[in-house]
Image (cartoon, rainbow, N blue to C red; front, side, top):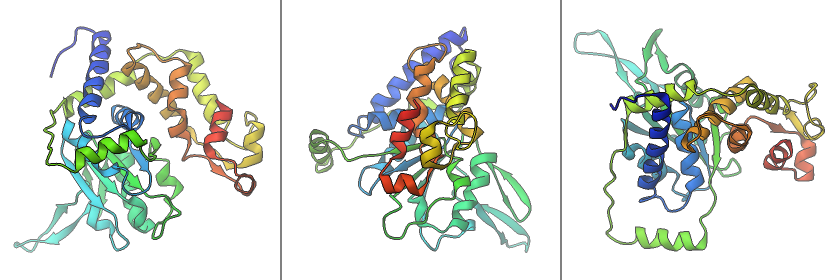
Length: 321
């Protein structure tokens, strides 16, 4: 791994590496630049991402492509209604010596693609909670550490679709970003069809190793942040909590509950990363605003009045900003 003379040089190298990763992923994924950017920010912040969109928008392909660009182990779990917790964490089996031996499940990888996570019952969804927060799994009373870096990149179909289960709030809160994918533009769709209806294959170059990712994760946490920017991030999260002193009028009118302290933490670390990949050495309020919507979207819950009046979560967040 390259040694940097100073943290300033390291931030410059991160910005350069980030651009190379985006360019490499762009050789396979058409458009979706903002989505790619947010997923990579999530990885450098040591967070997890939830990709939400209807089937066929290349959610799975995006995660697989990111895994190819990074020199990391990758496992894909297809979540189905009959999936059991032991199917993802692993289980103890009786070996030839009649001793119980732990067999690792697919969670034991650097990047785990939880495909269609909301098609499995809450019991199995909950098996991910410890892994996402503690970076470990406990089976038969024994705690097993996961390899680092560890990311869960989950895809979710809109909950209005058949055969889906809403994710528990406790699990939603573990995801740093809730990233919405929309249909491609006409021009982008033409390019997608051109690329996918021929024998064209793309060999992707590995841009970054696991050790480098861990280094940059630590570097981002060292980036200084001004008190007024940090206070803006914390106040933004506090404004989403109805019935509190900082709550905005729209929040009291339209929200059942708001974002917790984890949102404040993610707003600050996300702003630091957004600044670094933009070539800045300290975040400002614009960096907080840039990451606010995907961080807050899944942490605030509308009430019946908002549903009746057609008020969207995005509109409420925009008003707060």
